[in-house]
Amino acid sequence: MSTVLAVVAHPDDEVIGPGGTLAKHAKAGDEVHVLILADGKTSRADDPAPEASAAASAQEAADSAAVLGTAAVHRLDLADNQLDTYPLLALAQQVSAVVERVAPHTVYTHHSGDLNVDHELTARACMIACRPHVSPVRWLLGFSTLSATDAGYAGRAPFVPAVYSDITDSLDRKLDAMRAYASELRDFPHPRSLKAITAQAELFGAHAGTAAAEAFSVLRGTWQP
Image (cartoon, rainbow, N blue to C red; front, side, top):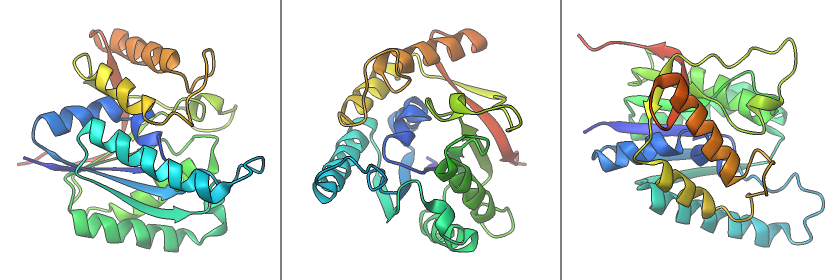
């Protein structure tokens, strides 16, 4: 049995990115943790009841985690889309505290080239927290996030996958976990739709020679002796 941790910026990123792989880990008996840095709601100026929305989002995250088989969800509830207002050191220290407590072998986090600043800073903080001489992390993998990675522009680092996870048997669980985030779902062709999530999984699957897959870049890896 191994321990894995997904470090994400917002509620639902853990599903859209590595959700099928996290479900595979849980089914295999691995201990799965999720760390969510930002609350995911406070940047939405048109929300008439932000406190109620935040509470509903927390419940959605818990319900989604139950579908994936997650052992625990850790939340920092920092300001949404404002992680650039915190010192990077402070972000890294808070991520480090969870990494030290959970002691994961594998960590999944965002692609640092995403347009969303929260994604970019989450990845940077995670890379600092998961340095090999200060953490037990052996594999640090980056994932793409629909509506953020694909919204990049010329000059930003592209997402270049190097590792694929076959989620043929866990795609349905990924979709069910996303259904738990009802407030975040949109109608196709919006990228945060069930149809778009399915299409991406099938495209990554075609890349890897499977029916469905998730793709990851290798930020750092260490083979066991």
